[in-house]
Image (cartoon, rainbow, N blue to C red; front, side, top):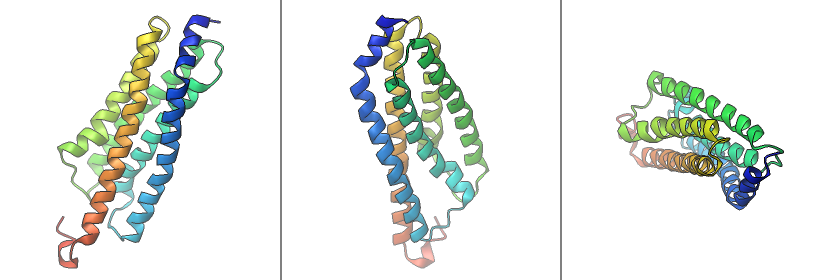
Length: 183
């Protein structure tokens, strides 16, 4: 049992309770966003939702998962590191798939800001999570800060992307019928 390193996890408990609770609540709100899209009768199809809507839920879920992993009563920091490493590796793979989905869909043309928030930042967050877990055993204190920053970054990406979706749907819904197909 690596007690000094494990005691560092205890110092982060409140942080992860806040992040995890926020992520859980925001997952529910994302379901509301999808319902609003349906009610507004947007033309978003499965490919667009897979490219932009689903990753937003996944970002919230990963922030929640990181919080749950680091709030669990681990007997060794290495065990938490393995769980976080799997999460980081899966996140990198998922981020790359998301980029492919965004490139394949034809219902919306992402601009540079979209690529930054929907693709670049989440990929960087998952790479940072993976790197931090590799370094966790040797450098626990800075690694724990990187892991915390990763959880926050994914939470903020999710918030931005959910807001972006809501404003897109609202603006599209407010346009007169003859202009809805032009955007």
